[in-house]
Image (cartoon, rainbow, N blue to C red; front, side, top):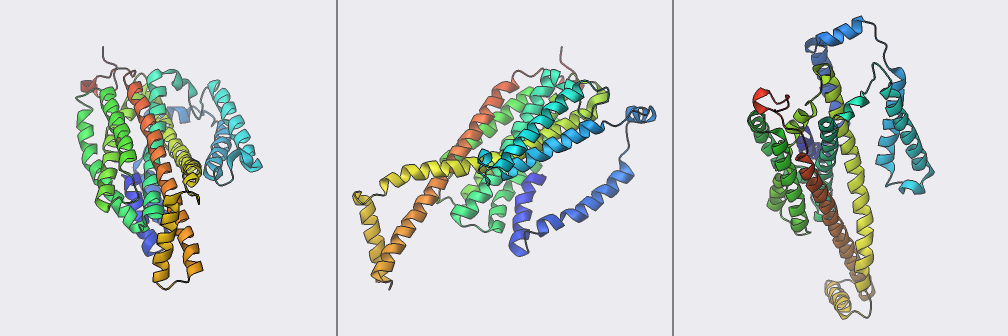
Length: 376
C-alpha cells in the first residue's frame, strides 16, 4: 500500500506545506518502527544458535555491498542529469559499482556465513522470483514516476490533484490483497503470477493508447486503476515461489534478497523512465520540428492566425508574432514529451510480456500444502 498511498499523501503535503516535510514525516514513523521491533520481534531459534556459536559477521561482504550499492544508487540518480558516461564522476561510479559488486559475488560464494547467500541463485525458482521482483520494482515505480510527472508538467495538475488521481489505485490493492491470500491456497502461484504480468502488460499497452494532453481526471483515475490491478497478483505469489526448494533456515536470506531486488528495481526503474523521457522527447522534437518550416503552409497559417489573434487582444504586431512562434514551439515540446511517455509505457508493456512467459517456467507448488512444497 505504501507506494500507492505515497503519491497522494506526498502531493497533499507538498501542495499545502513544503516538500521538506516529505522527509520530516519519516522521523515519527521510524521511531515507532524501532520501538515495535525492539519489543515484538524475536530471532528464530536457528539464529540464536548461530549467535551462540560465535559466528563472525561478514564485514568485508558488508563493506563491498555498501560501496557497490551506494555507488550504483548515486549513478542511477545522477546519471541523466550528468549525461551518463559523458561525466567522469558517473564513469568513476560505474567502475566502483562494477568492481565492488563482482567482488562481492566472488567473496560471498566462498564464505561459510555470507551476508548474502549467492548460492541460492542456483535455485531456478529463487533466481526467477528475484528477477521478477526486480522487474516488478521497475514497473511499479515507473508508473508512480510517470503518471504524476505527466500530469504536473504537461496537463497542468497540482501535486495534490495528481496524487488524488492516483489514490483510487490504492483502494483496488486494498481489496485485492486479502483475496490473493485466499487464492494462493487454491491456485498454483505460477498461474497467478502469469495473470498478474499479463494484466500489467495489457495495462501498460493500454496507457500508450490513452495518454494524451487532453486526458480527463476520470480517465486518469481509471487508467491508474488498470495499472495496479495486476500488481495484486504479483507481490504475494512471487514472494511465495521464491521459497520453493529453499531450506527454512534460509528464510531470512530469501526475504532480504527478494526485497532488495524490488528496491533495486525501483531505483533502476526511476532512472530508466527519466532517461527514456528525456531521450525520446529529444528524438520526437527533432522529428516534429521538420514540419515547422516557412515553406509549410499549415505552419504559416498557424503563425499568422495566432499572431492576428494576439494583435486583436492588444499586443503589438512584432511582439504578437514573437509570442506566436513561442507558443507553437511550446506546443511542439509538449507533444514531443507526450510521445516520449507513450514510448516509455510501450517499453514497460514489453517487459511485462516477457515476464508473463517466464512465469510458466516456474516449478509447480502445492497450494493446499501452504504454498511452499513442490507439487508431485
